[in-house]
Image 1 (cartoon, helix red, strand yellow):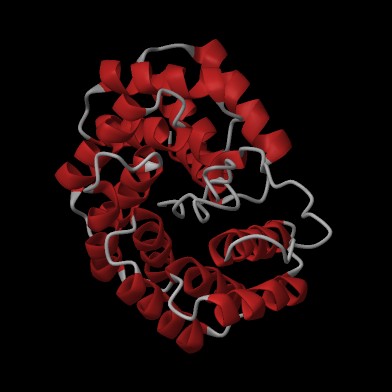
Image 2: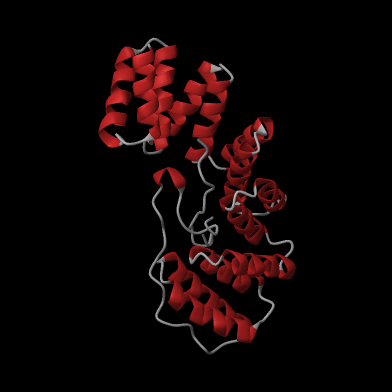
Length: 266
């Protein structure tokens, strides 16, 4: 099973997801409480920035209705702000208004065609809709800018989309670029471990798996991979430990069912 793309929330990283939101595999979110209100003083650009920051603060804390109000003010200041369009698209997507969200994403791309952040977020949106080829197109644009500070996240998302297309070589290349750019990319490490296991490169799979295990919480998928690797390396103690964690923490997971079937079949 392939996981969903990542949306980060490092400030100055405004989110993947967009760069805001939530990491798959259990990384902790980093949204902060939004300010009480934007300043109306200053230049139009300063006021626009204040409203956009306020909207994003509400978005990252899940207050979608309140996030719309500063976006309305941002539109009044600059009706061609790609960032305002992208934020509105994300809100609409979270509320299930997919068609209108896509319309605003396309407006954002039109107003900011060279902005990697909007390309990343649009790509994640398309991935969530199962439109993986289109997602790859957008995410490829997001990684193309060497000055993009969130390039590692975009490469990870690109890898996920390529996996859905069964483009294993392209996925592996994207995950490798992600961990080259940023060491702490557990999603990429786990995907690389799984790809190596599938290719019977067990030593490499174990290396990636240990790196993943050192920095991230175990998931059903990682525990199942740990069980399989323990079997390959004839380590019954490790297998029993991973199996116990899988049973105790994720007894209803598909991976625990696979484990049970493997025991019965063995």
